[in-house]
Length: 487
Image 1: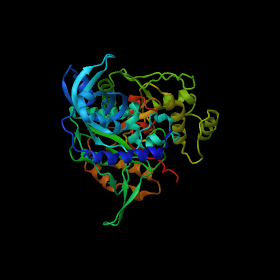
Image 2: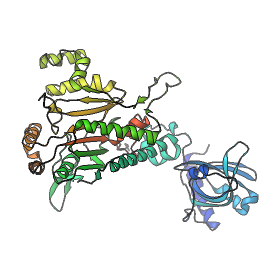
Image 3: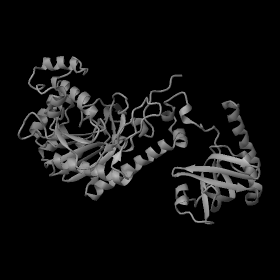
């Protein structure tokens, strides 16, 4: 078997052969083509077509060749014979799997029932100098498909479909908000103060101004400034950056939607989120049963039932769920007793955790991780959500929800805090000794008056994971961040 160096040398040698024949092996424009899907969807016997794509297979049988080309919409069979191509039939000997080709011909159906283009013209559009893997899963480096996503997209139909579905999902999300009168806006991604969430930011330097800037961890505080300025319905879909760990559900650079609706509350936002996800699933996925998988043939991977997105989604208070998981007396025992019970419940905590963080660790490990179908968890402790409005009947909780689907938070939603005095107190408490990190301009904006409003955030990457059944955030991001390969 030829090793890779021999294959590379052979492909480069063919460059000279193409040039000797008077052809540029990196071709020229080839306009007027139809996609593979368009051709298949509008098939008619003997219809003339113009096609282009990457050559992914070929079978040479004397004076006949059957081959497949591929584009982002799928693959299409082409057929060539000496009578149809004449001298150009010899080009097949110079074509390698991975080359981009273009051609013209007419449609017919083979005896096996496959719709095919009978070529009357053929040309090379771009030479592939590296062999394309035939079985991507055979690579020894399991991260290679993320490192070389361009190859993954060539050989993996599943990867290509998931990432194309992502584009359709984002498009549908945008259409949903526009149809409901929301205005799409863009807010700063470099900020002098990182606010709107509790997360470690990335720091950069602006040389001309001589100041540090922070890649934003959330757009919230700027979007609320727009409510102050008179906007009533706004949304943004853009990148957030958090200088934290990488995991199956976390990437330092991720896509977030945030939306704010003046005069609404967290209940209205919950219904909005439900309508959004249900509508998107129906239009893009064609079903409300998403994300399941069968058991593996060897039985090592168990079956996973689909997520049922059928409305109406239930609502349960945070404390009720914690009591069910950790004991009815959880909120009446002492803080030290709660720590001791965590050990019995096999919930890992650290000595540095505040008492409310201990409770939230119990919630995440014993409640959130086990939720499969959509559930709105409501009325969280005020310490967890400093930007939300306090509940009128219970001052220890805030009017918020966390939408949990498939064991992860997909969307939080708030009745937004618009009292500038209380907001300052909450942010000061959160900042602790780092009072210099308070966003004074945001607090000044609130003093001009912000209408009561509801707000939501939706992790687009996690939404795509939910709808497509992808098990890792890396599968739904075109180019996820990876640790550099060791040399």
